[in-house]
Image (cartoon, rainbow, N blue to C red):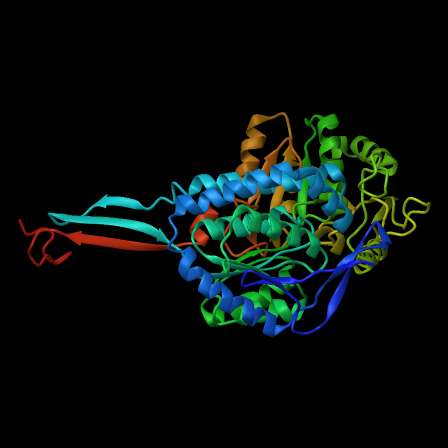
Length: 496
């Protein structure tokens, strides 16, 4: 019989007040039941927030270097359990072991990076404009942080949000995707083992009801969300009305540009990894391949041949290169876009169907799919699909490539392949994205650098790097006047 899991609230594993549960199944083999997880409601969120408020009062007073020491312990435990965590994640969400191993490593890197920031958290000390007066700023925690995370990076994204929030002195309520609850359960177990105090961290499983209550709860001043642009927009309306601090990381329609002077071998490797890694289920996935007409036919033929040879199957099997989609609804969405591509006159080059065979019969698999002749402005060219579908667009110049890249409503990641240094540096300025790679695919962010996009990809904040610590803390300015007299800034400044 499959195990029944619980929420983690106030230092205890507790059943949901709703009495309801959801099944968590392996998307590569739907006969494999991982466990039953809580389908929590508003009362569960309310209890979690009360506990987090109590935990915040104690945790925020702990010196930041000591908070960092606990996160360093987390990194050590994750390192020791890396293989186990990778296997569990692949079983739960489908991507191959090499990718889930990278997912865990990103969490490890984030833990160690956050731990070092415990001895930094820089403010500023500046000269006062008045005599015998001290002026400085410090970073202060905010309160309870509500974290809502997606399925595609079950370990990395929760750590991106949680570790900086905790390091800054905040408490946390984590509501992970209902598609990957087991990974978050394992992560919370690790934090408990590492010494996180009771009340500081809460884990509440569930769907829309739990997420909605977390966003709307008046006791949660900070919300961080990764997911669709439509959902993020709704969250933004609530948080704006309630004056909450909000970080949104949403959709993408990322393009790899290949110029006529590019290394085509390198470009081929990049687009295969960018388009079909994680079965296209990355916000940074290469959804568009924009190719100069002089090399278009040659590169397209090579991409078609290589994509058709990619091996689908359970990500825990050594020969597998592409895993399943997360669930049936995701696969049906891909199928709808294949129909849309045909209706709008794009040429189906390869894929466009469910695979046949024993390796894929019990999972949500779909063949890597390539459309050529995609017209700029068409739905395949501008809408996020979040699956293994690559739209190839032919252009005649660098300027046209930039225009095609920039015409979508998203602005997360982009890449350009060229041997011309002037073209490369021009692209760094011209491409309207939060991330641009030169001679590398659109995926591959590093934990110590800010991550995020422009336009409808986000709202200006960044995950990762030094900037995320600014999001999870507030600036407090401190003055000390030791002159023994009343000094009035601006009025007495220039009275000599």
